[in-house]
Image (cartoon, rainbow, N blue to C red; front, side, top):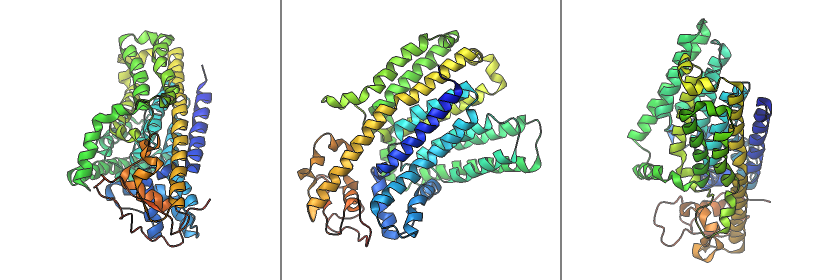
Length: 449
């Protein structure tokens, strides 16, 4: 079994290596990300179209905007920098959480579990602000539940996280009050309450409650009723995310076993049974060799985000209970006070993260192939290109196609203004940013190798 130091360092190293690789492969362009980059180049400014998600949206665009101000007109470089900003923001918060819990194997196991179950199974759609919202909740929970007293440093971090969460994502409708309650509990149990530190903690409570209010308002008065309806309809489609299914099944085996027989957490038995699902997860990319649709899909990561939010909130509550006096009354938490049981749980959390790497690498390589194919198509033809005449209309590339974004992806990948634009499928009649025959003029902005 690895030590907490090894688990912490390897996970942090892995996360940042993946950030750099995913940025290099321009994974931030997936679906909405291409439209974001088109608008950034067109406006030469931030793309900030939705107030309730404004802060995470803008922060993720900073590297690209800085480069733009420095005169960069290479959409390839801007795509990498946009990807870097979008990926680095939630990763930084997970890094904070890991650093804070690195000496406690049980808390470290909880944070590792969230990274494996949530972040690595839903973040291919990295442009989604929910990635940052989830990471903020985990980082704040880790910070609060490892604090021995109220400090100005912790208070300042909570305020900064609260400001960001004020306009980040609808998940704050339930995560906002949860975090606010945890902060209030920490203030209540603090042995001392220095005035300035306490003031910062109280301000953070107000900010997180404000985030809840903004989130509620965004659902009562949505940006688009059609979008809200489609989002609600996708909640039950989380099962389509094979990566999420397998890793959540592994976690559920441990949860159910620990409730039924908590003493077994100090033995290999529950982890061997749960490990079966991790082994299947490791080899899940091989499912792409079959004709079945049961295999890792980049597009299926988006539909699991709502259930993933409930996982984050549940883990936050479990961490809170573990650090409270109530833990002494619960058999599972008493069992985890044993070093062997805690170490085994931490090891399994670490293996959950590692088991996600093969399918993540598979999807990233598939995305690289997709972008290269789109690039080849638009540079070899002029004018509007029928989708049906391209390799994108056939598996496996067909599985990465989102019809409305095809013109934007084409526009981003053009090497000169005269290159082609791929039209959506003929049957597509929904909204798109611009007609394929009338692309936005992007001036000097083109994709350079």
